[in-house]
Every structure is written in C-alpha cells, then in structure tokens.
Image (cartoon, rainbow, N blue to C red; front, side, top):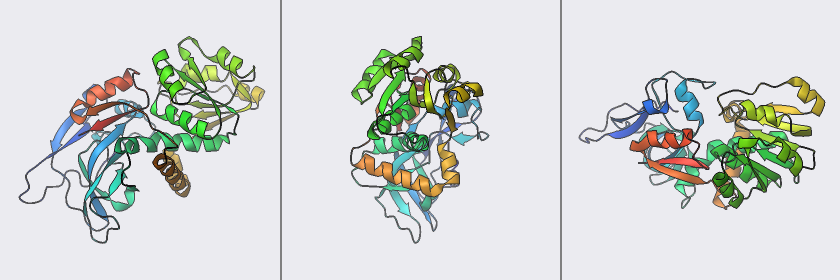
Amino acid sequence: MTCLAHITTGYPIGEVRTMKVVFCEKFGTHKDLVVREIDPPSSPAAGEITVDVSVRSIQFSDIVRIQGNYQDNREPPFIMGGDGVGVVSAVGEGSQLAEGDIVLTGAGCVEQATVPETSVLPLPSGIDMAAASSFRAGYTTALHGLQLSRIQPGESLLVHGAAGGMGLAAVDIGKLMGARVIATASSDDKLAILSSLGADHMINYSDGFRDEVKSLTNGRGADVIFDPVGGDVFDESMRCIAPYGRVLIVGFTSGRPALAKTNHLLVKDAQLIGYTMGGLMRHDPKKHEINVATLLDWLAHGRISPYISHQFPMDDIVDAYDVLVGRKVVGKVVITN
C-alpha cells in the first residue's frame, strides 16, 4: 500500500482526463475495496519522474492490511497494491532517467504516479513487465531469509505455502542454492505445478506433513524450514526440524502468529529467525540494494522465473483478491490497466 504525495493534485491545464486508483477506504474485507477515478498526478518537479504504470502485483499480505491486522498498518484511506512496472512519461529537472525508460515503482494500483526518482528501480529494456512487477517483494524476502539461514548445498529445505508468491520464490532460490526442496501446498493441482517448477518432493499438507518430512530426510527432519503460514503449520514444523535446524518466520497467512515452545528449540538445538523485507530496508539498506541487483540479474538471465497464474484488469480488483483468499493462486496475481 502506498500513499503518493502527488496523487490528488490537478492535471495540466487544458488536459481533461482522469485515472483509476484502487483504494482501501475502511478496514474490513477485500470486498470493500473501491476503484476511483481521480485527477492524474502533477508534472514532476526536480528530482521526480512520472511513470505510466502498465502492470502491478498484489499479495496475500494485502488482505491482512485490509483487515487492519498488519504489524505496521496505516489508517485508511490508502492505495492498494505493491510493486508496479511502467514507462517513464515525464522527468523533472536534472533527472538521470529519460522518457521511455522502464522502471519498477512501489506506487501500487494506480495508472500513473509522480514519484521521487530515487524511489524507482530502472529495468533493462525488453524485460517481461509482469514478471518484473512480481519478483521484488517475494524474492527479496526469500533470498534474505535463506541467506540468514546459512543454507548449504545438499541441505533439505521445507517450504510451506510453496504455491504462494513468497513460497514459490523460496523454492526457486532454494534450488539455485543447491538445496533439496520439499514443497507443501493445499492441493494436488498446485503440487503438480510445483513439481514442474523444480521442487524435489511435494506434500499435500491437508493431512499433515511431519511423518513424510521425516521419511524423506531419513528421520532427521528438515535442515531449514521456510514458514509464511504460522499457526498449526508452525506447530507441526517444530516436530520435524533437524538438529541444528533453522526455522524462518516470514508471516502468518493462517491468521495466527507462531507461538514457539522454547523447550523444542532446546531439545533440537534449533533456531528461530524472524525477519521482513521492510526490516532489511531499514536496518541494512546496502544489503537490500545488493540483493535486489542480484535478483534483477538472475531475472534478466533466466535464473529465476516468477510464476504468474492469474491476471485481472483493475476494475476487477475484488475478483483478483477473491482468488487469493480462495487459495486458488500459484505464484502471483497481476493487475493490468
């Protein structure tokens, strides 16, 4: 969700047009979201650019924000959505960018945005815009977490919620790092896609996963567990963690944060590691910058492959969140104009 300083300023004299924006105007459910027609942003001042956004991604954490339950929630009204990709249509004085450049911006579900030039990420020409709009949040979170876990080639990586955008990113990067990836998801259809995308072992966690993880690891348990789900999934994970294992706490899409029993950590000599992308950006911005550059290079060279299962126009934003809430998504959902 993004609040743009110029989002409601007037359009240029003589140019009568509006643009679409998706707003959360009150806490509730995604069905309360509204698409508004508002004035486009003002012309960019020095140090700013205007971006015509073509495609943007949404994620499950948006649902938690809409409910008012996110850890750093802001008060409504706010603009929905996260990263978007578009073309620079105007530049302010002294800009290092040019009209026609392709950039990644955190402007959210807007058709046009005037933003600080320093807030965007220039992208190479010819890049897949939908894939580029989908990689940053999930892939930077997954990469940083796996770095924190110090995962080694040949170690077992158990990824929960592996069909989601963040989980699928962990599968993708885990394979790139040489891990043996065990992916869990809620349906056999999702698992079939995960198999085609490189996961080594698939588990439908509807009937539990502890015993199968133990079997796949010769009774040892998983060396690293990537958990964006929390709740009961976390509880069961603590019963199939390997000695000296590391559990990455990424979120709680189940609606219940993980409650750790520290005696389990003692018995297994295990570690819990909690982190967020926002925390990395605040506490170690240089590291975040390096990670984004690394991921962008991997994306440009086909070493990572963000998977997009659904695409909706902005007017159908409620339908887009319906498929997220209904757990029908593999990878990401993107919103077009």
